[in-house]
Length: 189
Image (tube, rainbow, N blue to C red; front, side, top):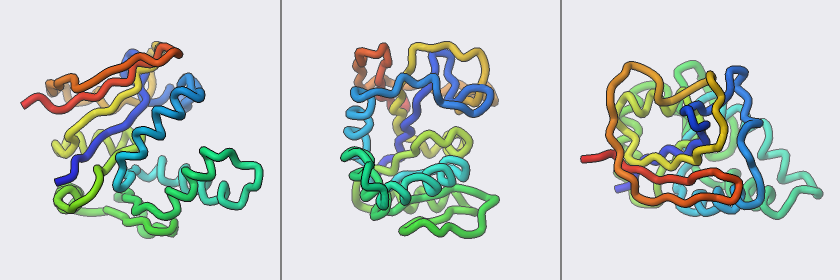
């Protein structure tokens, strides 16, 4: 059985984007890129919400036609072109990017069926709105967070909501040179 893993960059105060939806506060560098490559290696299908999907769809296919693209970007673009992508959105009617499945209704049942399939894990990339929905449905098994050394004060969060306590167990952690703490948690049983 596959797991549903949330991979998200968060500020020290738990925000996944700033109040304008921006991500320029993430200290993205070669070390974080390499860490992200490790995460991608364990992905069977990426899971996105509508906003993140649209952002990914508008950028990554164009990389395939860019002769100046870096090795990393070209490899990631090829992977994204071929991998089965999952989009969770109740407002979209169609998806056009190669090999993409839209989950519009019965989210819990659809995700549970995907988790029962053989293969590598389903990984939610960012997508705080979809992640919050999946968290509220009790579908997320692990949390892979890169905790960035910044306090945003406000923004969009997966974790601020109805006040229900969710206990987690730390599985592993490491500190990157930029001050990012890469931590993996599972739901405490």
